[in-house]
Length: 227
Image (cartoon, rainbow, N blue to C red; front, top):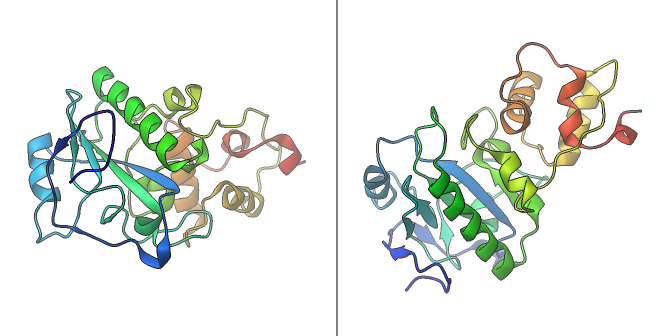
């Protein structure tokens, strides 16, 4: 049976799950896009025992909400990665898939349903806004969802994701300093400088191009960290 929620999702059970390890409970929510042609195609894949992938929830572009795995169980959505020095993200998280190819905006009704679901889950599991992350945050260089078209600032304004910083970055943007500040912000996966910059920009400045610049530091904290 599905987990208790006021949103009454359509229960569409996936066989792809297991117990959470080491007594862990959800402290993170990982957002994904499906990168498939339709929600029905995504449902089929997430419930196919062959690929061994799943998620706790899927939200269609029309706002339809499905639940595939109980929140108490470990869905197979995150894969290899790390956040704030912690691995086995599947045991620490709930996964939400959004019906989107990654190359177009997310619909208003879909975003509204996501906001409702986030409020519901965060209240039930006492997950702080900083615990809402993208797949690309914890698996940089390997994953790129929910992508450049996802409106993180919309979630931030409602307290559904950690607010970004706003101080002016350092005049001399050194890569070593940027890596240290990014690690403090949670980006601890073992990746090179280029992959790290791409991951931070995908979350905060997806339009940015070129070399590391002062503005790349801004969303990660405050001026006291780099002055």
